[in-house]
Structure formats: structure tokens, C-alpha cells
Image 1: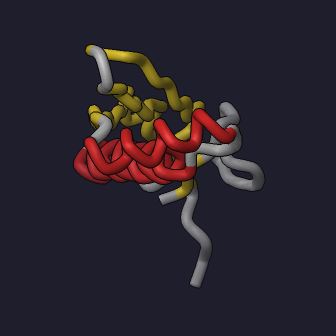
Image 2: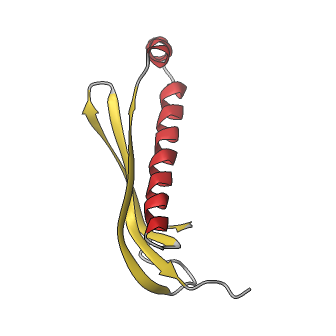
Image 3: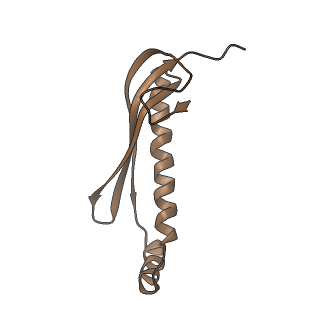
Amino acid sequence: MIIVTTDFVPGKEIRELKGFVKGSTVQSKNIGRDIMAGLKTIVGGEIREYTDMMNEARQKAIGRMVEDAEAKGANAIVQVRLETSAVMQNASEIIAYGTAVTVEQENS
């Protein structure tokens, strides 16, 4: 699956629009991460536990978006965006969305 943030795939012609696709996940903090984060806020620096959690959440959201695109018969997703929002205290949603398309295939 080709994933780009642009309106087109460089060097490829879009053959068909398949429509809007999305994937999301809601991640919550856990007590182990909270303890480590609390200690880190005292001394300063990156809170690696949360960075890792959000990276994992982004990958899940993108993976679910790709599944949605594949179900529609797409081989690429253009105009991809990622957003995050707090859905409740100590929980954040990550959503990945874009437009599923089919682009010309390489000749083998």
C-alpha cells in the first residue's frame, strides 16, 4: 500500500477514487507508565513511555486505515492526515484518514 500526504502519488496516475478511509485507536495511560512519567516530570526530559505509547497508537491507526483501503480495493492512500484528541482524562484517540485510490501498477 502506497501512503502519501500529497494529493497524488509521484510518478503514478490515479486511475480510480475509492473514497474516504480511516483508522483509529484510543490509548490510555497505565499505572506503570504513570509512575515513570511522574518521575520524569521531576527531573525533566522526554517521557519515553508516552512517546512509545503514541508511536504504537499511530501505527495501529495507520494499519486500520490501510485495512479499510484494502477492503475497498485500493492500492494507495493519498492526502493522509493524522490527528489526536483527548477523549477522556488519561485517554487519547489517534485517527488516521485519507482518500483511497487505485494507481497504475508497475509493469513486471
